[in-house]
Length: 260
Ligand SMILES: C[S@@+](CC[C@H](N)C(=O)[O-])C[C@H]1O[C@@H](n2cnc3c(N)ncnc32)[C@H](O)[C@@H]1O
Image (cartoon, rainbow, N blue to C red; front, side, top):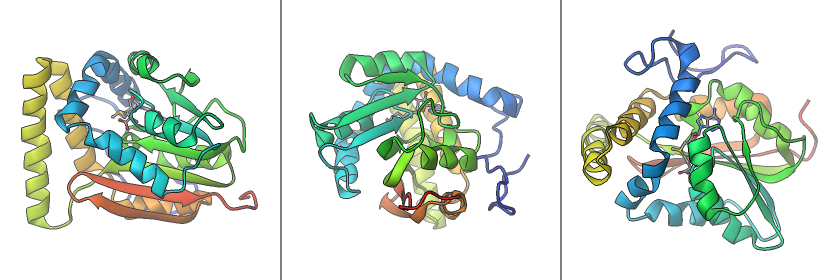
């Protein structure tokens, strides 16, 4: 099945990437495959993060502050993983605020529990176990490619945000130029999986980084993601490249009037 470049009719399903036959044999098996992979590699995730000198942790916090996260706010961090986003968010909202985490992987939730003291729930982005109009901020770090459908996911984000609330998403980035793409591929498809294998001695951890690159390379373009945000009713939906060849960011706001 090929991925549509853009939603053609309102409500059309927009998977973030085409099925990847090298990893699972049918699209229905994708979610199970992804959760199993994160369960098996959860204990290595922070070692991989440390390969980047934990710069990603600092960056996530800096970016959340720039996006408007303030003391006292209530945040939902979807795909909390080892709490790389949630830890930064918790520092910014302080004692008066609160950060909730959700993730389908029990392995990742176990790792999050070691360093994060807010409420944790098992669940997926496409069906959030929270009531409408609950959060000032919804965040998602490096996980949008793992959802089954962007439209359903963004609808859920809009539903749980309070009017005026903010959506913040960090994702992988590939430069558009041929040379930039080639350099990025060399780094993410060769160097980083190799360093991951050396530092963790885990073939599963290397597989996780192989999978990371393949999903980033196969991901629909940023314009499609922004269009899906607009389609469900986000205002000021936009993306910006943060570190070329590494990260880009998506932000959007829920209007003061509930979207129909
Ligand atoms: C690369 S980790 C990101 C962790 C963390 N947010 C960060 O910024 O480092 C991706 C996470 O997405 C989670 N995940 C996979 N499928 C998901 C889904 N459908 N909904 C929510 N989270 C999902 C995985 O279990 C994993 O913990």
